[in-house]
Image 1 (cartoon, rainbow, N blue to C red):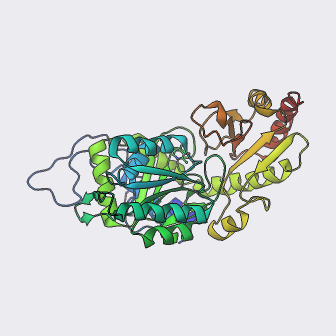
Image 2: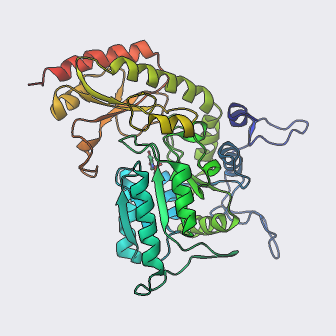
Length: 402
Ligand SMILES: *Cc1c(COP(=O)(O)O)cnc(C)c1O
């Protein structure tokens, strides 16, 4: 079935007479249970509850996975579990531009687990492949002790290098060549983990390109209303899923029943929201390109984007994030964020309301991100209203020029 249909129909209760159309919110920390539990039995709500399952089933269907996904208490909880797949003494390759907390968590592994972390320009396929091969050589080289593999109930997980991919990257919107990077990493017995938050499963399905694990900040487009913080992972490997489930149960960063229900409620309109916001993002990117008060616009859907062709092949939509560098530098960009009346000046993205942020205002952002770069998350308002608001705010920014 088509993703638009899956988003609406997956995870509904069985169609029996008098059954509700939506799953119930069940508030229970424990379940009646005697004797030895059968596999999949509900026992205790940290290990599994019926309130997560409908969303986990729907997300897996959208990502094209046979196994249900795993819902977490936040995107970072899901990412922490995924990064725990990197064995002690292992090799991790990460993008130089990416969600800042993911990059910090990756570098933490160096201190905590002796993991060697290499930063790469993820859009530079040659450089990433070289880094993956160099990491594999170090792991198998006689001078380095072999990395300990992560055990799962089904056996060990491949202990080659782990490649962490964001595509498009936050906030630079660089696009990685997923099939090429997956082939090169699998060639050396490695794993490819993809943060699919920006693209959503409607824009790209990393598992279909061979990726091993997909992670989401459900907080963003999937839930879509800026009212919950949640995360998820999806994989089609029973071994990896078992390891990730262990991390969730032991780490305990689990979702509340009401938040899980809201995420499924939000997911129902994902296709409509993404269609509209994507169309508006493309429209705004066109209108802002060449605008006298704009230095630069970046959007994967623009033919001027360096990886536009790659994105056209690999993605089924170019997403709803664009970046903008206004005339007037960082001070002008800050003034713009104070001058907008419709756009919400706030961090985060993927809500029905359009929002924007100058990323370098946060000290943690990579120094290679331009000081004056604004990240725009396009919502579902009318494109003309969004453009008019930006135009008047760009005029304010321009007073800071020269
Ligand atoms: C927001 C975000 C995260 C973190 O998710 P939380 O739900 O805030 O924990 C990870 N990756 C990307 C790309 C994000 O935008």
